[in-house]
Amino acid sequence: MLLVDMSNELSGRVAIVTGGASGIGAASAALLAAAGAAVIVADLQPARGRSDGSRDGPGRFVAHDVASEDSWKSLLADVFAREGRLDIMVNNAGISGGPGNIETTTVENWQKVQAIDSEGVFLGSKYAIEGMKRTGPGKPTIKGSIVNVSSIAGLVGGAGPTAYTAAKGAVRLLSKSVALYCAEQKYDIRCNSVHPGGVDTAIFNPLWQAMGHEQGKAFIGARHPIGRPGNWAPPRISSRSTSSRSRAGRPPSPPRRRNSALCTGS
Amino acid sequence: MRNSIEDCTLAEYRRINDINSLGTFLGCKSAIGAMKAAGGGSIVNISSVLGLRGAAYAMAYCASKGAVRTLTKNVALHCAQMKYNIRCNSVHPGYIDTPMIAPRLEQNAGNMTGRQALEELHPLGRLGRPEEVAAMILFLLSDESTFSTGSEFVCDGGLTA
Image (cartoon, rainbow over all chains, first blue to last red; front, side, top):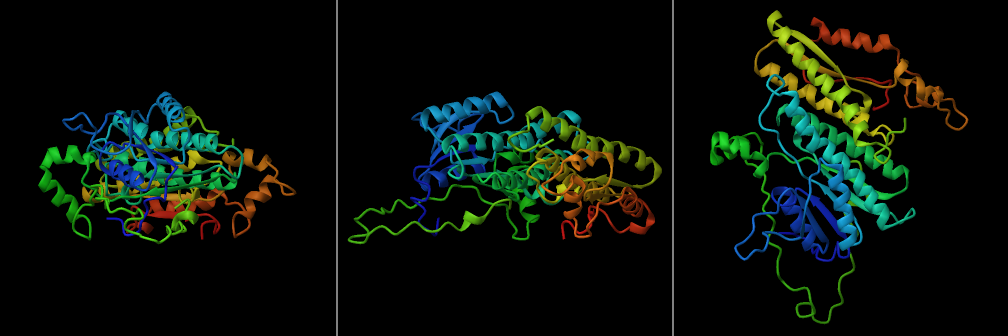
């Protein structure tokens, strides 16, 4: 449940969320939509559909493979044809690659994980900037925000498989370099990385299959001081109206100064 | 040379990460195989200050060195858990006077030479010498450092202080 009324925070903005059909991506897409953004859910497959044919989640679905540069070009072309601009990129798509330590990880597995978790974020950052420049040509009106989902495995060594740990460390530093470059070019584009711990999403499916879902969650939960994995379920956004009916006579409150406006490279 | 997010191609990103990151992965894998047989050992992976801080024009290099930083910890913890008596640490040099930076020394910046511009990045006011990094590597490979594993050892003239 959002504590602050963000319902107009992102109105008029267009956001792409990769891996947005499930898990953290879906939760992000839901919050972005609730904040007023037009959201494009870019994923290999849409979320599970409901029986009436509608998709289980907000946003417009576009089939996308983050590891393919051609797919990025098509995605951007599609977004510019439909929504006409890009303001926000959430590079969230990722795979664990299955369990693997330094001894058991093969080169093939390493390359598969890097392609999605590292190269996919590199391409996503690159095409984000291209889209944001196309939206607001000429400095300083180029504007946007890129969020790259890294992991605690981008911070510590024992939180994930070997190839995943390396890829998430790459995302951590890539994000800082992108942030510094955009600042130096005087693009008003921020770039930050997010480092989730264990969150109960599809990335853990290999582990849930290996040890059972409940046992797996207990195992992961025990590794966090707080004692449980993180939750991804999109918050129920209050359907309470912000129209004049509930705010009779009062003018709308002015937009809040965003706390994150100074946040880049973090 | 100027490898920013806009300049860098996928092929170049992959090439730099293959050499620096995949190469280190393969080195660790091979080393463990041999060290297990020998009863133990010490692995040193060369990361960089650019594995600690971002750089606008060395984006792929930063990514690759960030990967080495966390890969090192993953290897260290695995070897510790398996009781192999193998340690693994990363070294993070600043700008060291070696052939790798020769092109940068040519890039004059305003009224400073390329060399001066790089020297200025370091509070100690100079570039590092290869033997200064080698001394740290020797420390990590020797019995002087037997309680250190999964750690970051910085040799940067104060650049990241």
